[in-house]
Length: 204
Image (cartoon, rainbow, N blue to C red):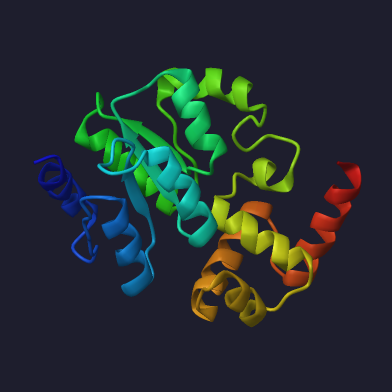
């Protein structure tokens, strides 16, 4: 019933959005491994069979370029903090409405991070990153986990094809990530991005 309700809401994202549903962690991992590339995972923290945060850790290791938004009835600072530290790109509470969920997903798909308004400031202090204003380049530019991994390889001078091979992505997907990274950094070329990252690295 919960999944059916979510699917109804997610259809409002647009007519071209393709949705898949999984009833447990095993089914979710199988989907990610066998279907086409995914743009986003919406993860219920109370999944049957395994703890949702445990699955989040697995997803970050096996599918690092796919952003994950956690959905939960829990909104305590400790749980949200753990989820974000494990690599979630967003956290949505079940106490919110469908419009809030859609807003969160749209922001994450656009390369941003999302947190409930009542936890945003507290969690920024807790994480020590300022959600985009931290000390690392990834924090400073508000990169998603997938973009951060691409950026690290970009800084090493890897080509799009090499980055794709290392992260299990198509070259086209890597190009999309690189374009978003350039836009967030305010640069227009690979050389300019690498030079800027190297300068910032020396200041850390």
